[in-house]
Length: 212
Image 1 (cartoon, rainbow, N blue to C red):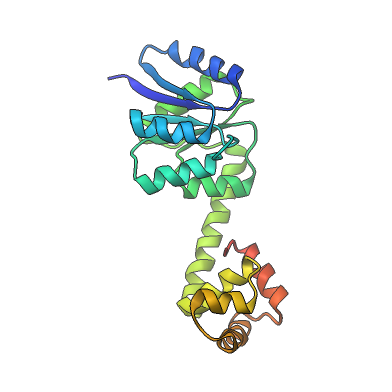
Image 2 (image 1 turned 30 degrees about the vertical axis):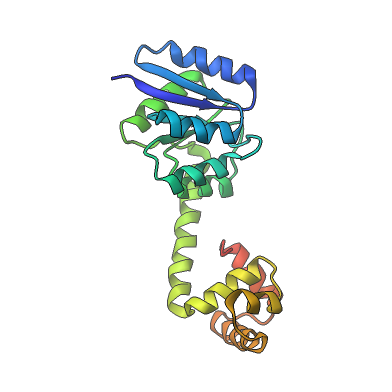
């Protein structure tokens, strides 16, 4: 059985190169090529490929949006990110969204072929220079979330997230359907539990730990 592929990149020359490279592999079949995020989601839904080769920077819906839609639809397609650059935070996000492969465009084309085969077989291929740091960051953040869930009540955690997103007390009260004075009481308790002394300190603390 061939490995079926959908390719997504907003640069026609890169799409041409990818298609030529991958069609040269006898066990690869390219089902569709896409230049926007919306096209990509539609193509994956229509063709149900084994592998989606995805650039993060796409018009209409970016790569993160594509990943979220595919995750929501519970589609079985595995994803290999092919991108010019991916910082640590972005790598954490794509790993959390289920991406199994990350290849930089500066790498040798044969490495993309190897990554596709490895991901298709159930393995993982991550860009080595930043993946270790990203995985460590993810573990730390998940650890903080687990710790926070034991210290804070679900309502307090919701308020921390709202503060991290810059919401005012009135907006938080409306969102949670509680009195504005109740939000202030919760904030006082949160400050004590987390050892912070101001709204700004809480916002910075939450953002540093990716609570948003």
